[in-house]
Amino acid sequence: MNLLSSRMDGVRGEGAFAVLVEARKLEAQGRSIIHMEIGEPDFPTASHIVEAGKEALDSGWTKYGPTQGDPELREAIAEVVCKQRDIKIDESQVVVTPGGKPILFFPILSLLEPGDEALYPNPGFPIYESMINYSGAKAIPIPLVESRGFSLDVNVIRDKLSDKTKLLILNSPQNPTGGVVPEEDIRAIAEMVLERNMMVLADEVYSRIYFEEKPFSITSIDGMLEKTILLDGFSKTFSMTGWRMGYGVMPKWLLDAVCLMMVNCNSHTSSFSQRAGIAALRGPQNCVQDMVAEFAQRRDLIVDGLNNIPGFSCTKPGGAFYAFPNTTQTGIPSDELAHRLLHEAGVACLTGTSFGDYGEGYLRFSYATSRTEIQEALTRIDKIMSGL
Image 1 (cartoon, rainbow, N blue to C red):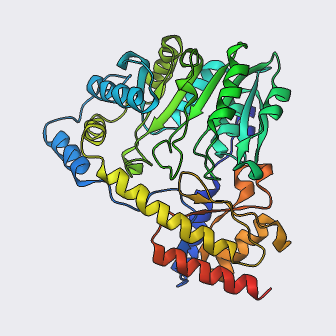
Image 2 (image 1 turned 90 degrees about the vertical axis):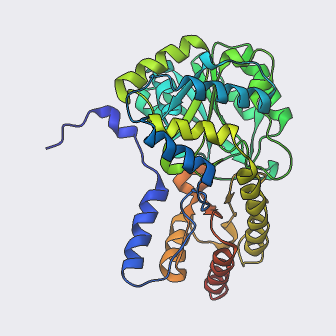
């Protein structure tokens, strides 16, 4: 018996979790697996943040809280957002959610309906397309261009915009490519958006994980705060994936709708986690700086190594912690190649098609693991590819 509604037909999962399950099965059989499939920092949550969480539990922060989020945390978020992006907002424009995904799900459901169109990057985080489909709107993929550092082609966006377009999703630094969209491209996109009746969802969860030029936020452009949903969070920046905290900054009229979705779905984000979030934002930041410095070294190691493997070509990413090598010269489809690397080399990675059709010919490796593990993975992959 199947009583599922038709709206579930367009909902998809995340390939990383499926590959993780498969990799764990191989490990249970005694196989040695190097995990490069999950996008999760391997660093512990900083001790001052953990202590703040413990203290919150001991102090009774175990009860219901405001749906919009702890007022003190929202104030801290507003301070950081203003400083990092050189904009002016206050805590009334901030909503705290259990992870970043609700800031994809709730605004998309609040804004889109059947007949609307939404543009999203492809290859991109699979939840973008999934949630657009769930809303009943039409998902329009915008291909990322490897020769442009995996930026969006502004001319393609211009061609795809129509009277039906209600939303454009931007992600910089990007998952899965690690690309950073240049400021000039973002300014060109803003010009198009400002003259239309539409919104931008700016996914900036990797905003502080960059290696050269600081990513430019579309919210920094005059007029765009009123037309943008800003998504950020604690999982990647502070290695707090299990604490489940993200946040959104948006116009008040939309924030009210998102809070209605929150109260109907989650009630609120856990109270003690939010107290730890205050410590993360207002406490020492060396934990973030040290992590990014280590990621930079890992990036150079994996990119140089992949470029020395037959059939692989890897652009150096500007942010996040992903390498996205082009593997078309191997002549092996992405799905098959990822499967072979897992089962023959013991290296778990993701096929580019996990992130959309334009991901064919690519693989994604998360270098959120030790340099020793990265070097071993490169050795294993090279051995397999050299033997073909």
